[in-house]
Length: 518
Image 1: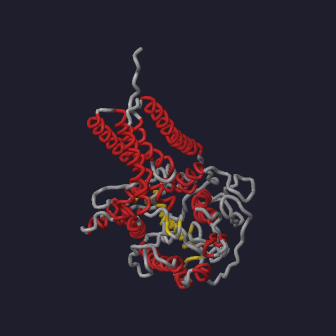
Image 2 (image 1 turned 90 degrees about the vertical axis):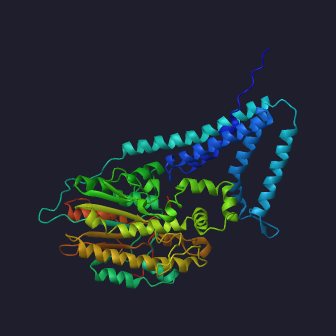
Image 3 (image 1 turned 135 degrees about the vertical axis):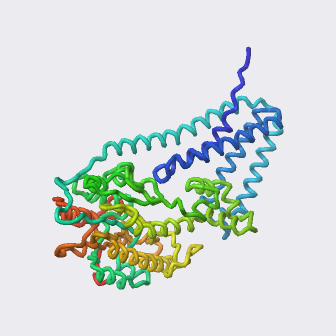
């Protein structure tokens, strides 16, 4: 009877499985397309290794086993390093390369010796590994497909909740609207108490320029995804139940951010929608008229023309590529050192993203005809801490987290005041300007023994030109931000909701004590 020998496919599947699995794990944060190049490169390298060993050994099954061993060893190294780096034995960390490298070399050497020495028929083992690899591939592919289907469904079901007859003001030109969202910007009293910085001069300066500062404001939710979905749709996320909980799925929340009621309302009013690339898939708005991207930025963004994207950096960190980066194998050329630094710690990339948005906001006045709605989500003063108080770049993580947070706030304050001055002075029509935090400080609350509920306190400031100043509450919260704007300037009939805050996805309602002078 003719015996059919199984195809050698498991090395190719094991070669691409780690890439597909990493795509699936990060699908809500990073577009799947960013992993395509890694997928192709991994497949080609695996194929070449398999071909080389097949020609050298004249045994396809042994070549397949060795190739699978190489690829699995390479891609598992970074994961094991991350798992063991905080586990100590006899006073030393198990995740150190000096422990892991000998372990990997030893296991690999023994396995390689066993494969080369064996004279057994390996067909059955090849069949088994083909099945295992196929099942492993199916699981993340299913996760990716499920997410994309849910995301598409949420996109189709997301509908505007416009309140009646919104229209432009008849007696004057419509104002440009600037929504500057400062990620992780806490309230003044928190800054004074915990971060060692007095933010009152900044808030006073805003008020002197005509801003209303809600000095007792709280985020409605302590998570960016929840907070932004609520603020941009002007609703609580309880789906009308009145309970202190978030009932929407992550994919629904993502779509509520990417195609929101606020965006649709301004589009219906004839506004040009202007956004900036925030660096996260779920924060990137759909169907905007103009999106500013840092394409003109050189240096670390294109990694000296290497063009590595966010997914590829992540893949290096979770593979044996992390060993090469940590050991700084190449350390002679300054430019190569720069590349290694950015790959190993994307602080420079983050700093350039923040600077790009801060510099580009005022440029929209001349580059985009009005009326326009400009939405800038700036991931600062949220960590990583990349600025000192005077704006000097920080190349390494500071030891004092709280002091560094205060310094970063001091720097972004300087930039925000410069932006505000330009927007007010150079706009043809006095603009509406909103400067707001999505939640408070991102710090280790438990480790620092600070009540995590204080994460709800935020910066919340409004420049509202024209007419008598409305009677606004010092505790005005983001769910009411655009209810206020649409009602006051665009004939809306939303009305203000009661300001309420919860911690996480579900908690009791939280009302923080407030030192309103800060």
